[in-house]
Image (cartoon, rainbow, N blue to C red; front, side, top):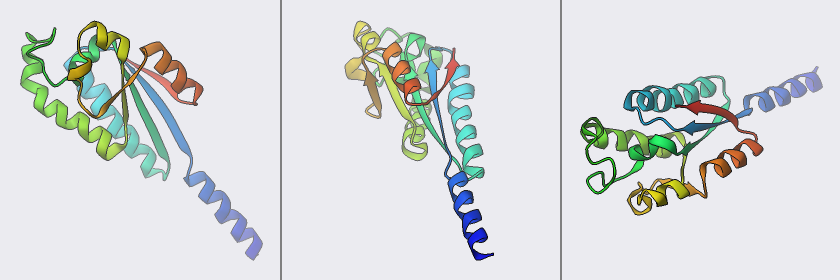
Length: 151
């Protein structure tokens, strides 16, 4: 009986530590999409798995029209006339920063695209870089991450 109980506890511990991985392919430049699908979506998904005593490892590859959400200096960027973004920038920065610090989300920007747009030096410090979006997505998927587009 004791061996059976130990075996059951062992398997329960293994099941509880199951890790899930997802890489978000973020290309959307729509503020509502970012708020709902990325910010709210990630926190919901993380909470769901934690409620099942499991983990969710999240990475976000940033490219396309999404660069604008991750830069400090909008005034000196191609996005200087985006009034909706300017009004939400401070709140958005805090929420993105909290994804990294509280939820351990890895934010990775396409360096090639950022460089072409002159944004490399204006990116929030909590955002990392991948050489380009395709390489970032390939690498994450080869590490076992499920693919989830956000466009």
